[in-house]
View 1 (cartoon, rainbow, N blue to C red):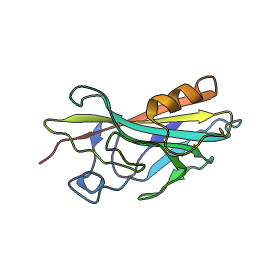
View 2: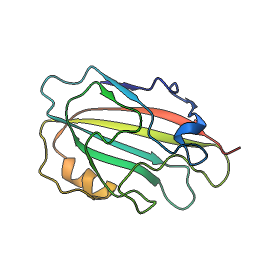
View 3: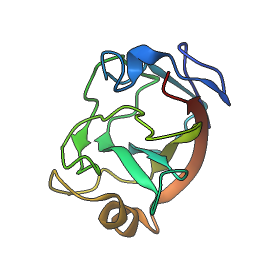
Length: 143
């Protein structure tokens, strides 16, 4: 499985449009080589370079099998991010250059989950259902 974005390359700079200094909307994501037996997708975006803990920017699950997540869209049920919202929260590092991990999981089931799960709750729920995993890393530093 492969995840890429028309907005930035792997280890490339995320455009300001998709950050707290811009429109703060999710970038488009292209998904390739999804396992044939996959029933749903999960997307988690987090920043391991944040002070004190890995900062969660977006949690989306029960995404149907699609080849593109559109820009500024909600492709599935949203979980709670570390901004305290059920939505995308773009890169907004307090200082320095940070890495943003776009983690995509293909699952063997559409899970019966309620909206609003945290990243850790979701990771626990998908354990044992993961068929494949890929990630895309983008970078951002405030101007």
